Amino acid sequence: MCSGDLGSGDILDDVAVLVAERNRQDARLARLVRAAELSQASERDGLRSMASWLRGHCRLSAAEASRLVRNGRALEHLPALAEAHDAGLVSAEQVALAARAVTPERLAAAAAQGLELSVIDAVLTGVAVERDHATLVCVVQHYLEDLDPDGPEPDPTEGRSLTLAKHADGALSIRGQLDPVGGEKLQAALESLVQTDRPAGDERTRAQRLGDALVQLADNALAAGALPTLRGHRPQVAVVVKLQDLADPGTGPGAGRMGFGAVISAARARWLA
Image (cartoon, rainbow, N blue to C red; front, side, top):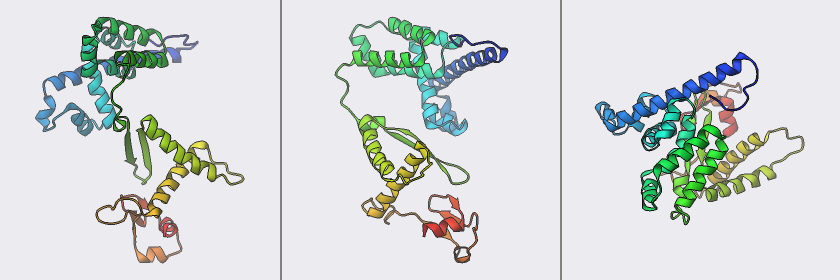
């Protein structure tokens, strides 16, 4: 169950019960995925991994599919944590954090240093069950730093990922993460544009200003002409729209199709031109 005072009222009890049940179902799912991986069940559908099967058949994101596979593997090495997960006391997100400590490389490093995996399992489980999420993050990170105090040779590409999801209306959702240096570069570039574009009476939120700055950063890069060619041509925003729609002063919803598939109005196409 959730720890701490749930307050009065049945609705909070119901929330706690459902969270615990979700944790139990997530534990069962992780074990099933691991069993399917060990039996190479995905190959019966012509796919080489369970992660690809989960993406294709269950429509999970790449990140969620990978996390589910990693959780299944991690639970094999952390029986105490697995038991708490089965009981609904630990979430899939907490298991994913603990999984960082039991990758093949870190298991080998722990064995070389004479560390008992059962002790690590007990500590991680105790923190996950009794303390808040931020504490578990700190404990896992502290363990990883102690395991390899010098740290591996930094590879910034391992800490960078970006996912672009296009919606039916052409809008784009952005999700990703950057390593500290890459993140600092992006923040420096965006902040310079945010601070420059602050007209009087500006009521945009911080998030909106950052979104505008990101678009401006792309505008500047495209206009500079220094980007690599794309399929033999200089990258640029392309719109296909009928001449009569372009000439018509009306809004013309859905009249234009952009290079990456988004549908826009004729009015927006005229604005781009």
